[in-house]
Image (cartoon, rainbow, N blue to C red; front, side, top):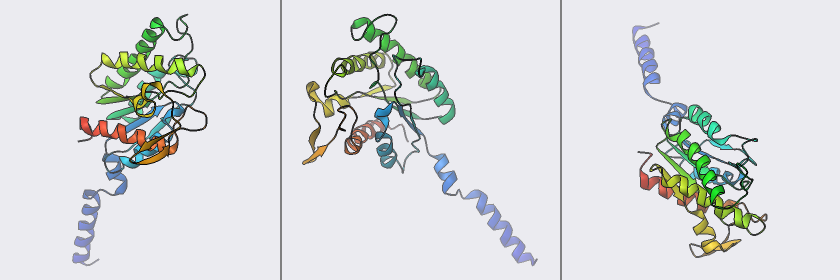
Length: 229
């Protein structure tokens, strides 16, 4: 091979190592983990779209799980596994739609039950924070349309707020106030001058459009904290 061709090949090889490709550039982005039960679905997709230029957003939805039913999934233990696997800079948690089970012999939803819920939520938060996560964003449950969920969801929200109050790097995102102000259920709401269907037919989950709104409020809080800089 001609000496000039050899030099050109060597330079090209050096540039190929020096210039990161799309895959390596994506790997260099900070990670924002979206996790929880079925409530995080659709929200995780909306978060991924809104943060695509700033972060990678893997999703880990554990359907039908809850802090009050650890027999199906032990969330604090799972949180430790997630922190080791994904190494997130921030975690967005949307959890609690399947809760309301007795804990330590205490039925939902009195003060002792809420304190136990706060203890378990706190263990989960600590599992992230002790492994390098800078912020945990805990999304509050919008009120359900009916049934026992009407009393369970406020208790779940109060328990998670109590846990967050003791941890300065945990942020509560009050989606309950966005979608169901004063506990009033709304299947649709006005947003930016338009009437938007924000809940699914089951009266529990957010619709895709509702998930976009939830993601906007969450990303706004993430940007305020500057955790992706």
